[in-house]
Image (cartoon, rainbow, N blue to C red; front, side, top):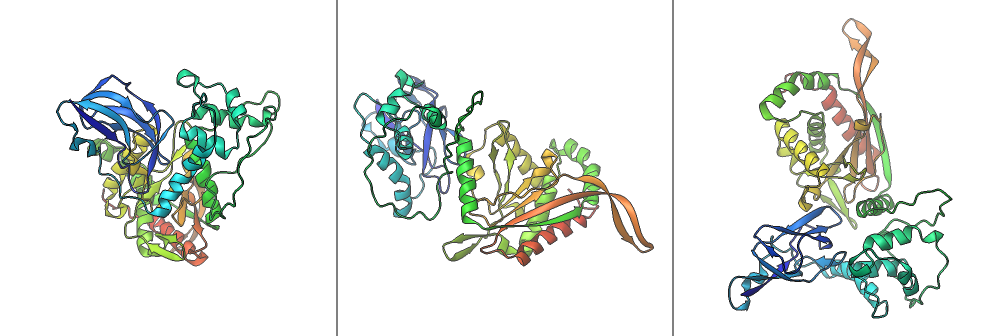
Amino acid sequence: MAEYKLLLPSMGEGVMEATIITWLFNEGDNVKEDDSVVEIATDKVDSDVPTPVSGKIVKILKQKDEVAKVGEAIAILEIEGEGGNTALEEVTTETPAAAPDTETLKTIEEPLQAASAVEFSGDLYLSPLVKSIAQQENISESELKSIKGNGLEGRITKEDILAYVSNRGNQPAQQAAPVQETAPAAPKAPVSAPVSTVSAAAGDEIIPMDRMRKIIAENMVKAKHIAPHVTSFIETDVTNVVKWRNKHKDIFEKREGEKLTFMPIFVKAIVKAIQDFPMINVSISGENIIKKKNINIGMATALPDGNLIVPVIKNADQLSLSGLAKAINDLAYRARNKKLRPEDTQGATYTISNVGSFGNLMGTPIIPQPQVAILAIGAIVKKPAVLETKDGDVIAIRQLMFMSHSYDHRVVDGSLGGMMLKHVHDYLQNWDLNTEI
Protein backbone atom coordinates (compact mmCIF):
# COMPACT_ATOMS: atom_id res chain seq x y z
CA MET A 1 0.00 0.00 0.00
CA ALA A 2 1.13 3.56 -0.66
CA GLU A 3 0.39 6.87 0.97
CA TYR A 4 -1.19 9.69 -1.04
CA LYS A 5 -1.49 13.31 0.11
CA LEU A 6 -4.65 15.07 -1.03
CA LEU A 7 -3.70 18.70 -1.64
CA LEU A 8 -5.93 21.76 -1.74
CA PRO A 9 -6.21 22.47 -5.50
CA SER A 10 -5.76 25.77 -7.27
CA MET A 11 -9.07 27.61 -7.38
CA GLY A 12 -8.25 30.37 -9.82
CA GLU A 13 -6.31 33.59 -9.95
CA GLY A 14 -6.05 35.45 -6.66
CA VAL A 15 -7.41 32.63 -4.46
CA MET A 16 -4.62 31.54 -2.13
CA GLU A 17 -6.50 29.76 0.66
CA ALA A 18 -9.82 28.23 1.64
CA THR A 19 -11.70 27.38 4.82
CA ILE A 20 -12.83 23.82 5.45
CA ILE A 21 -16.63 23.79 5.79
CA THR A 22 -17.26 20.09 6.34
CA TRP A 23 -15.80 16.70 5.53
CA LEU A 24 -18.13 14.43 3.57
CA PHE A 25 -16.21 11.32 4.69
CA ASN A 26 -14.57 10.31 7.97
CA GLU A 27 -11.20 8.79 8.74
CA GLY A 28 -11.33 5.10 7.82
CA ASP A 29 -13.85 5.60 5.01
CA ASN A 30 -13.13 4.34 1.51
CA VAL A 31 -13.51 6.82 -1.34
CA LYS A 32 -13.60 6.38 -5.09
CA GLU A 33 -11.88 8.44 -7.74
CA ASP A 34 -13.75 11.74 -8.37
CA ASP A 35 -15.75 11.45 -5.13
CA SER A 36 -16.27 14.86 -3.50
CA VAL A 37 -14.61 14.46 -0.11
CA VAL A 38 -14.70 17.91 1.46
CA GLU A 39 -16.63 21.16 1.10
CA ILE A 40 -14.57 24.36 1.17
CA ALA A 41 -15.25 28.09 1.13
CA THR A 42 -13.20 30.91 -0.37
CA ASP A 43 -13.95 34.62 -0.38
CA LYS A 44 -15.55 34.04 -3.77
CA VAL A 45 -17.68 30.92 -3.65
CA ASP A 46 -18.33 27.63 -1.89
CA SER A 47 -17.27 24.45 -3.69
CA ASP A 48 -16.10 20.92 -3.05
CA VAL A 49 -12.84 19.05 -3.60
CA PRO A 50 -12.90 15.68 -5.38
CA THR A 51 -10.22 13.06 -4.92
CA PRO A 52 -8.30 12.11 -8.09
CA VAL A 53 -7.61 8.60 -6.72
CA SER A 54 -9.45 5.79 -4.96
CA GLY A 55 -8.38 4.74 -1.47
CA LYS A 56 -9.00 4.94 2.26
CA ILE A 57 -8.85 8.17 4.26
CA VAL A 58 -6.35 7.38 7.00
CA LYS A 59 -5.90 10.90 8.39
CA ILE A 60 -7.67 14.24 8.02
CA LEU A 61 -5.09 17.01 8.36
CA LYS A 62 -7.38 20.06 8.22
CA GLN A 63 -10.46 20.10 10.41
CA LYS A 64 -13.71 22.03 10.04
CA ASP A 65 -13.20 25.83 10.17
CA GLU A 66 -9.45 25.51 9.65
CA VAL A 67 -7.77 27.38 6.81
CA ALA A 68 -5.62 25.62 4.20
CA LYS A 69 -3.39 27.23 1.60
CA VAL A 70 -3.42 26.19 -2.05
CA GLY A 71 -1.08 23.22 -2.47
CA GLU A 72 -1.21 22.28 1.22
CA ALA A 73 -2.08 18.70 2.23
CA ILE A 74 -5.56 18.43 3.75
CA ALA A 75 -5.79 14.63 4.09
CA ILE A 76 -3.77 11.43 3.71
CA LEU A 77 -5.17 8.49 1.75
CA GLU A 78 -3.98 4.90 1.61
CA ILE A 79 -4.01 3.67 -1.97
CA GLU A 80 -2.99 0.56 -3.89
CA GLY A 81 0.72 0.41 -4.70
CA GLU A 82 4.09 0.22 -3.03
CA GLY A 83 6.88 2.53 -2.08
CA GLY A 84 5.41 4.73 0.63
CA ASN A 85 5.16 8.35 -0.46
CA THR A 86 5.12 8.03 -4.22
CA ALA A 87 5.04 10.74 -6.85
CA LEU A 88 1.26 10.56 -6.60
CA GLU A 89 1.41 12.80 -3.55
CA GLU A 90 2.27 15.68 -5.83
CA VAL A 91 -0.83 15.21 -7.98
CA THR A 92 -3.64 17.68 -7.38
CA THR A 93 -7.09 18.01 -8.84
CA GLU A 94 -5.79 21.08 -10.68
CA THR A 95 -2.39 22.60 -11.31
CA PRO A 96 -1.29 24.51 -8.20
CA ALA A 97 -1.24 28.26 -8.56
CA ALA A 98 2.05 30.06 -8.89
CA ALA A 99 3.65 30.88 -5.58
CA PRO A 100 2.36 34.21 -4.26
CA ASP A 101 4.77 37.09 -3.98
CA THR A 102 6.22 38.07 -0.62
CA GLU A 103 3.71 40.87 -0.01
CA THR A 104 0.72 38.64 -0.81
CA LEU A 105 2.06 35.84 1.37
CA LYS A 106 2.56 38.29 4.21
CA THR A 107 -1.05 39.46 3.88
CA ILE A 108 -2.27 35.87 4.03
CA GLU A 109 -0.10 34.71 6.89
CA GLU A 110 -0.12 37.66 9.29
CA PRO A 111 -3.66 37.14 10.71
CA LEU A 112 -3.01 33.47 11.47
CA GLN A 113 0.43 34.22 12.91
CA ALA A 114 -1.07 36.87 15.14
CA ALA A 115 -3.79 34.49 16.24
CA SER A 116 -1.28 31.74 16.99
CA ALA A 117 0.65 34.14 19.18
CA VAL A 118 -2.27 34.40 21.61
CA GLU A 119 -1.61 32.12 24.55
CA PHE A 120 -4.38 29.76 25.65
CA SER A 121 -4.23 26.91 28.12
CA GLY A 122 -3.75 23.40 26.78
CA ASP A 123 -7.29 22.29 27.60
CA LEU A 124 -8.82 24.91 25.31
CA TYR A 125 -8.78 23.72 21.69
CA LEU A 126 -9.23 26.46 19.07
CA SER A 127 -8.89 26.19 15.31
CA PRO A 128 -6.67 28.81 13.61
CA LEU A 129 -9.76 30.55 12.24
CA VAL A 130 -11.41 30.77 15.67
CA LYS A 131 -8.12 31.93 17.20
CA SER A 132 -7.85 34.64 14.54
CA ILE A 133 -11.36 35.91 15.29
CA ALA A 134 -10.69 35.83 19.04
CA GLN A 135 -7.49 37.86 18.57
CA GLN A 136 -9.13 40.41 16.27
CA GLU A 137 -12.08 40.88 18.65
CA ASN A 138 -9.82 40.90 21.75
CA ILE A 139 -11.75 38.03 23.36
CA SER A 140 -10.10 36.73 26.53
CA GLU A 141 -9.66 33.08 27.47
CA SER A 142 -12.22 33.42 30.25
CA GLU A 143 -14.75 34.67 27.69
CA LEU A 144 -13.92 31.81 25.35
CA LYS A 145 -14.50 29.30 28.13
CA SER A 146 -17.97 30.75 28.65
CA ILE A 147 -18.95 30.06 25.03
CA LYS A 148 -20.86 26.85 24.50
CA GLY A 149 -19.27 25.05 21.58
CA ASN A 150 -21.36 23.06 19.11
CA GLY A 151 -18.45 21.36 17.39
CA LEU A 152 -16.91 17.96 17.89
CA GLU A 153 -16.45 17.26 21.62
CA GLY A 154 -17.88 20.69 22.45
CA ARG A 155 -15.28 22.65 20.47
CA ILE A 156 -16.01 26.26 19.58
CA THR A 157 -16.84 26.61 15.87
CA LYS A 158 -16.71 29.67 13.67
CA GLU A 159 -20.50 30.03 13.95
CA ASP A 160 -20.29 29.87 17.77
CA ILE A 161 -17.72 32.65 18.09
CA LEU A 162 -19.41 34.87 15.48
CA ALA A 163 -22.71 34.51 17.31
CA TYR A 164 -20.92 35.45 20.55
CA VAL A 165 -19.34 38.51 18.94
CA SER A 166 -22.72 39.66 17.58
CA ASN A 167 -24.30 39.35 21.04
CA ARG A 168 -21.28 40.56 22.95
CA GLY A 169 -22.78 43.94 23.76
CA ASN A 170 -25.40 42.18 25.87
CA GLN A 171 -22.88 40.10 27.83
CA PRO A 172 -21.42 41.09 31.22
CA ALA A 173 -18.09 42.84 30.91
CA GLN A 174 -15.11 40.48 31.05
CA GLN A 175 -11.51 41.27 31.83
CA ALA A 176 -9.70 41.08 28.52
CA ALA A 177 -6.39 39.32 28.37
CA PRO A 178 -3.48 41.74 28.06
CA VAL A 179 -2.44 42.30 24.49
CA GLN A 180 1.13 43.24 23.64
CA GLU A 181 1.18 46.71 22.14
CA THR A 182 2.85 47.12 18.80
CA ALA A 183 3.03 50.00 16.41
CA PRO A 184 0.55 49.07 13.68
CA ALA A 185 1.36 50.01 10.11
CA ALA A 186 -1.07 52.48 8.61
CA PRO A 187 -3.49 50.45 6.46
CA LYS A 188 -3.99 51.46 2.85
CA ALA A 189 -7.60 50.31 2.99
CA PRO A 190 -9.87 48.60 5.52
CA VAL A 191 -10.03 44.83 5.22
CA SER A 192 -13.24 44.33 7.16
CA ALA A 193 -16.48 46.08 7.85
CA PRO A 194 -16.53 48.30 10.94
CA VAL A 195 -17.87 46.49 14.01
CA SER A 196 -20.86 48.24 15.55
CA THR A 197 -21.74 47.93 19.21
CA VAL A 198 -25.48 48.59 19.14
CA SER A 199 -27.29 47.10 22.11
CA ALA A 200 -30.35 44.96 21.46
CA ALA A 201 -33.57 45.95 23.16
CA ALA A 202 -35.95 43.51 24.80
CA GLY A 203 -37.65 41.36 22.20
CA ASP A 204 -35.10 42.11 19.46
CA GLU A 205 -33.78 39.14 17.53
CA ILE A 206 -30.03 38.80 17.09
CA ILE A 207 -29.07 37.14 13.80
CA PRO A 208 -25.36 36.44 13.30
CA MET A 209 -24.13 37.22 9.81
CA ASP A 210 -23.38 34.13 7.76
CA ARG A 211 -20.01 33.79 6.04
CA MET A 212 -21.17 35.21 2.70
CA ARG A 213 -22.86 38.22 4.29
CA LYS A 214 -19.65 39.02 6.18
CA ILE A 215 -17.68 38.85 2.91
CA ILE A 216 -20.22 41.10 1.17
CA ALA A 217 -20.03 43.61 4.03
CA GLU A 218 -16.24 43.69 3.92
CA ASN A 219 -16.15 44.08 0.14
CA MET A 220 -18.72 46.88 0.13
CA VAL A 221 -16.89 48.87 2.82
CA LYS A 222 -13.62 48.40 0.97
CA ALA A 223 -15.14 49.44 -2.36
CA LYS A 224 -16.66 52.63 -0.94
CA HIS A 225 -13.43 53.46 0.87
CA ILE A 226 -11.29 53.07 -2.26
CA ALA A 227 -13.41 54.51 -5.06
CA PRO A 228 -15.02 57.99 -5.07
CA HIS A 229 -18.38 57.15 -6.63
CA VAL A 230 -20.18 59.35 -9.18
CA THR A 231 -23.49 58.32 -10.77
CA SER A 232 -25.11 59.44 -14.03
CA PHE A 233 -28.72 58.65 -15.01
CA ILE A 234 -30.60 58.34 -18.29
CA GLU A 235 -34.10 57.26 -19.35
CA THR A 236 -34.24 54.97 -22.38
CA ASP A 237 -37.05 54.04 -24.71
CA VAL A 238 -36.74 50.26 -25.09
CA THR A 239 -39.96 49.72 -27.01
CA ASN A 240 -38.08 48.12 -29.91
CA VAL A 241 -36.24 45.82 -27.51
CA VAL A 242 -39.52 44.66 -25.95
CA LYS A 243 -41.12 44.11 -29.37
CA TRP A 244 -38.09 42.17 -30.63
CA ARG A 245 -37.96 39.92 -27.57
CA ASN A 246 -41.71 39.23 -27.68
CA LYS A 247 -41.30 38.19 -31.30
CA HIS A 248 -38.39 35.83 -30.71
CA LYS A 249 -38.71 34.42 -27.17
CA ASP A 250 -41.02 31.49 -27.98
CA ILE A 251 -39.11 30.58 -31.13
CA PHE A 252 -35.81 30.73 -29.27
CA GLU A 253 -37.03 28.60 -26.36
CA LYS A 254 -38.42 25.98 -28.74
CA ARG A 255 -35.21 25.91 -30.77
CA GLU A 256 -32.63 26.13 -27.98
CA GLY A 257 -34.50 24.96 -24.91
CA GLU A 258 -33.46 28.23 -23.23
CA LYS A 259 -35.36 31.26 -21.96
CA LEU A 260 -34.68 34.52 -23.81
CA THR A 261 -34.52 37.28 -21.19
CA PHE A 262 -33.64 40.95 -21.61
CA MET A 263 -30.20 40.46 -20.05
CA PRO A 264 -28.32 39.26 -23.18
CA ILE A 265 -29.62 42.32 -25.04
CA PHE A 266 -28.40 44.64 -22.27
CA VAL A 267 -25.02 42.89 -22.16
CA LYS A 268 -24.66 43.16 -25.95
CA ALA A 269 -25.29 46.92 -25.75
CA ILE A 270 -22.79 47.29 -22.88
CA VAL A 271 -20.12 45.36 -24.80
CA LYS A 272 -20.55 47.63 -27.83
CA ALA A 273 -20.27 50.72 -25.63
CA ILE A 274 -17.12 49.36 -23.95
CA GLN A 275 -15.60 48.83 -27.38
CA ASP A 276 -16.40 52.49 -28.12
CA PHE A 277 -14.88 53.60 -24.79
CA PRO A 278 -12.20 51.05 -23.80
CA MET A 279 -10.94 53.26 -20.96
CA ILE A 280 -14.02 52.23 -18.98
CA ASN A 281 -12.69 48.64 -19.07
CA VAL A 282 -9.72 49.31 -16.77
CA SER A 283 -8.39 48.81 -13.24
CA ILE A 284 -6.10 50.92 -11.08
CA SER A 285 -2.82 49.59 -9.70
CA GLY A 286 -1.14 52.22 -7.56
CA GLU A 287 -0.55 55.13 -9.92
CA ASN A 288 -0.94 52.99 -13.04
CA ILE A 289 -4.03 52.25 -15.11
CA ILE A 290 -4.35 48.69 -16.41
CA LYS A 291 -6.34 48.63 -19.65
CA LYS A 292 -8.00 45.23 -19.91
CA LYS A 293 -7.74 43.21 -23.11
CA ASN A 294 -10.73 40.99 -22.35
CA ILE A 295 -14.30 42.16 -21.80
CA ASN A 296 -15.65 40.04 -18.95
CA ILE A 297 -19.08 41.12 -17.72
CA GLY A 298 -20.03 40.49 -14.10
CA MET A 299 -23.73 39.85 -13.55
CA ALA A 300 -25.00 40.64 -10.05
CA THR A 301 -27.31 37.78 -9.04
CA ALA A 302 -29.57 37.59 -5.99
CA LEU A 303 -29.53 34.23 -4.21
CA PRO A 304 -32.52 32.52 -2.54
CA ASP A 305 -31.03 33.21 0.91
CA GLY A 306 -30.95 36.96 0.23
CA ASN A 307 -27.22 37.16 -0.40
CA LEU A 308 -25.58 38.36 -3.60
CA ILE A 309 -23.02 36.82 -5.92
CA VAL A 310 -21.52 38.05 -9.20
CA PRO A 311 -20.83 35.30 -11.76
CA VAL A 312 -18.82 36.41 -14.79
CA ILE A 313 -19.53 36.11 -18.52
CA LYS A 314 -16.03 35.59 -19.88
CA ASN A 315 -15.09 37.18 -23.24
CA ALA A 316 -18.61 38.54 -23.69
CA ASP A 317 -17.52 40.40 -26.81
CA GLN A 318 -16.93 37.09 -28.57
CA LEU A 319 -20.44 35.73 -27.94
CA SER A 320 -23.51 36.10 -30.13
CA LEU A 321 -26.88 36.98 -28.65
CA SER A 322 -27.68 33.26 -28.56
CA GLY A 323 -24.35 32.52 -26.86
CA LEU A 324 -24.92 35.28 -24.32
CA ALA A 325 -28.41 33.96 -23.53
CA LYS A 326 -27.06 30.46 -22.89
CA ALA A 327 -24.11 31.71 -20.81
CA ILE A 328 -26.33 33.99 -18.70
CA ASN A 329 -28.95 31.31 -18.07
CA ASP A 330 -26.28 28.78 -17.12
CA LEU A 331 -24.52 31.11 -14.68
CA ALA A 332 -27.79 32.28 -13.09
CA TYR A 333 -29.00 28.69 -12.62
CA ARG A 334 -25.73 27.49 -11.11
CA ALA A 335 -25.49 30.57 -8.88
CA ARG A 336 -28.94 29.96 -7.40
CA ASN A 337 -28.25 26.26 -6.93
CA LYS A 338 -24.75 26.71 -5.39
CA LYS A 339 -23.02 25.00 -8.29
CA LEU A 340 -20.65 27.79 -9.33
CA ARG A 341 -16.94 27.05 -9.56
CA PRO A 342 -14.47 29.55 -8.06
CA GLU A 343 -13.35 30.64 -11.54
CA ASP A 344 -16.97 31.50 -12.43
CA THR A 345 -16.82 34.54 -10.12
CA GLN A 346 -13.36 35.83 -11.07
CA GLY A 347 -11.99 38.18 -13.69
CA ALA A 348 -14.89 40.60 -14.22
CA THR A 349 -13.86 43.87 -15.88
CA TYR A 350 -17.29 45.55 -15.80
CA THR A 351 -20.55 44.71 -14.00
CA ILE A 352 -24.29 45.01 -14.67
CA SER A 353 -26.96 44.94 -11.95
CA ASN A 354 -30.61 44.44 -12.86
CA VAL A 355 -32.44 46.27 -10.06
CA GLY A 356 -35.54 46.25 -12.25
CA SER A 357 -36.03 42.58 -11.49
CA PHE A 358 -37.19 43.70 -8.02
CA GLY A 359 -39.57 46.30 -9.48
CA ASN A 360 -37.17 49.19 -8.77
CA LEU A 361 -36.99 52.10 -11.21
CA MET A 362 -33.34 52.87 -10.58
CA GLY A 363 -30.45 52.31 -8.17
CA THR A 364 -26.93 53.47 -7.40
CA PRO A 365 -24.87 50.27 -7.06
CA ILE A 366 -21.43 50.06 -5.50
CA ILE A 367 -18.52 49.51 -7.89
CA PRO A 368 -16.93 46.09 -7.31
CA GLN A 369 -13.17 46.30 -6.87
CA PRO A 370 -10.95 46.37 -8.86
CA GLN A 371 -13.38 47.51 -11.59
CA VAL A 372 -14.09 51.20 -12.18
CA ALA A 373 -17.75 51.18 -13.26
CA ILE A 374 -21.09 49.40 -12.91
CA LEU A 375 -24.40 49.85 -14.75
CA ALA A 376 -27.79 49.41 -13.07
CA ILE A 377 -30.87 48.57 -15.17
CA GLY A 378 -34.27 49.63 -13.84
CA ALA A 379 -37.74 48.22 -14.41
CA ILE A 380 -39.33 48.60 -17.86
CA VAL A 381 -42.54 50.62 -17.44
CA LYS A 382 -45.19 51.73 -19.95
CA LYS A 383 -45.45 55.54 -19.96
CA PRO A 384 -46.78 58.31 -22.21
CA ALA A 385 -43.87 59.89 -24.08
CA VAL A 386 -43.42 62.64 -26.65
CA LEU A 387 -42.27 61.32 -30.05
CA GLU A 388 -40.96 63.44 -32.87
CA THR A 389 -42.42 62.52 -36.27
CA LYS A 390 -42.25 64.09 -39.72
CA ASP A 391 -45.77 65.40 -39.09
CA GLY A 392 -44.87 66.90 -35.70
CA ASP A 393 -44.74 65.82 -32.08
CA VAL A 394 -47.14 63.18 -30.80
CA ILE A 395 -47.78 61.53 -27.45
CA ALA A 396 -47.60 57.73 -27.47
CA ILE A 397 -47.41 54.85 -25.00
CA ARG A 398 -43.78 53.66 -24.88
CA GLN A 399 -41.71 51.16 -22.88
CA LEU A 400 -39.32 53.28 -20.82
CA MET A 401 -36.48 52.30 -18.51
CA PHE A 402 -34.01 54.18 -16.32
CA MET A 403 -30.31 53.29 -16.29
CA SER A 404 -27.73 54.52 -13.79
CA HIS A 405 -23.99 54.41 -14.35
CA SER A 406 -21.74 54.56 -11.27
CA TYR A 407 -18.05 55.11 -11.93
CA ASP A 408 -14.77 55.67 -10.11
CA HIS A 409 -13.96 59.37 -10.34
CA ARG A 410 -10.24 58.71 -9.86
CA VAL A 411 -9.99 57.64 -13.51
CA VAL A 412 -13.47 58.09 -15.00
CA ASP A 413 -14.62 61.69 -15.34
CA GLY A 414 -18.18 62.76 -16.01
CA SER A 415 -17.59 63.05 -19.75
CA LEU A 416 -16.36 59.45 -20.13
CA GLY A 417 -18.90 58.00 -17.69
CA GLY A 418 -21.75 59.97 -19.26
CA MET A 419 -20.81 59.23 -22.89
CA MET A 420 -20.47 55.53 -22.12
CA LEU A 421 -23.99 55.55 -20.65
CA LYS A 422 -25.34 57.51 -23.64
CA HIS A 423 -23.95 54.92 -26.05
CA VAL A 424 -25.64 52.08 -24.17
CA HIS A 425 -28.83 54.16 -24.33
CA ASP A 426 -28.46 54.70 -28.09
CA TYR A 427 -27.84 51.01 -28.84
CA LEU A 428 -30.95 49.98 -26.90
CA GLN A 429 -33.22 52.78 -28.08
CA ASN A 430 -32.28 52.16 -31.71
CA TRP A 431 -32.44 48.37 -31.48
CA ASP A 432 -32.90 46.86 -34.93
CA LEU A 433 -36.11 44.82 -35.09
CA ASN A 434 -34.48 42.68 -37.80
CA THR A 435 -31.64 41.55 -35.51
CA GLU A 436 -31.08 37.82 -35.87
CA ILE A 437 -30.58 35.38 -33.01
